[in-house]
Length: 152
Image (tube, rainbow, N blue to C red; front, side, top):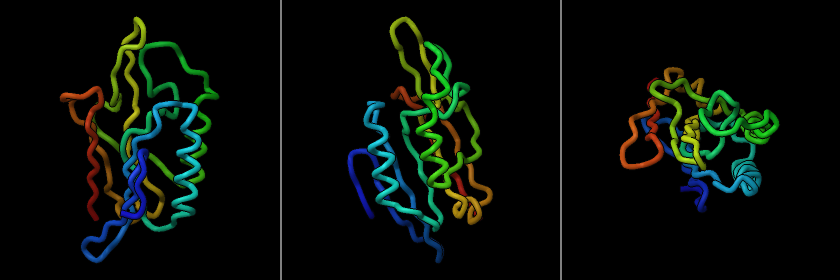
């Protein structure tokens, strides 16, 4: 483990003669505190050029297609998360299963969103070209489990 706090655990994994970084996240549920977490990861990780995977509950979506139910979100509300992804060279992994990974009641509305995801930087994508994530069925939680599969 390289760094741990209430919002993420950053690790370095060594296997089969290779090494890469994995950051497991539980993003801040309070949207007013999310920028602090994004800034902290950028400061802690810096410009990581080695293979890097981030996975977990980001408590955020990147566009309106990742949400069903409830009031529409303005386009400008997605900018900070997209900026974080762009500045850190992060892209979503290909996935299978129902990507609406969270469900909950908000007032009279059932809302479903893609709050959980797996994404990597370019170096990880090049090292593991067959990488993908899979959304599993809801079981005992309001979040779907997500697993990441990568082979060389």
